[in-house]
Length: 228
Ligand code: SF4
Image 1 (cartoon, rainbow, N blue to C red):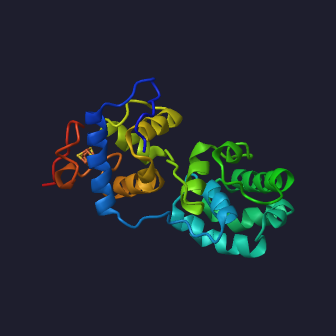
Image 2: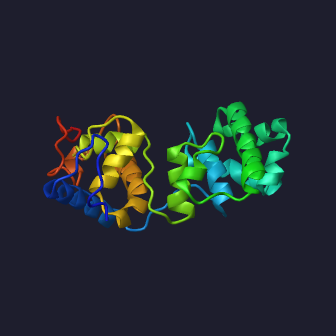
């Protein structure tokens, strides 16, 4: 359980605050009972690399490029020794391809040199890998290893602030606030549920408040009205 965990500002959520969070989490769980990343992957290494490539593009774009990527360089050893120009050609369509190529080759080399080519299943180790931050590490922990982890991306940051689950802006502090509020067994799927809710209903520019099942709970103002 998250009970007893401390928020980023040092406070402990009240029973009322935890109850409010539980109602939101339960409604999202009812709406999205089965949810997982849309990134296609066969093992933790592929998910790690795909998550790095997914920056600034859609999961669909990543999924179009990665079958060839992982067919040609299926292991960390293969990718660590890859010709950057060839990798660039394969992931070109995902954007920022030069930077992403450098990142995934450096990541593969780091994995080989320090972890024998095996993706570690602990946050403390994952975040030491080149180019891997808490968000990417949390995605890999939750999705590939089934561990309780909460990835905070732009959707999660926006929606948790709109719903007053946090007043923080920094992703690490938001993660801490959510872990203080939400029972541990809900952590694993929480990010994906919020992200999908952000795509379907609570978008950045035009939230669909008029048809939102959280509208009666949500303190965000002004709520949007249906189009004429
Ligand atoms: S009521 Fe509007 S702002 Fe609040 S969660 Fe729903 S869509 Fe988002």
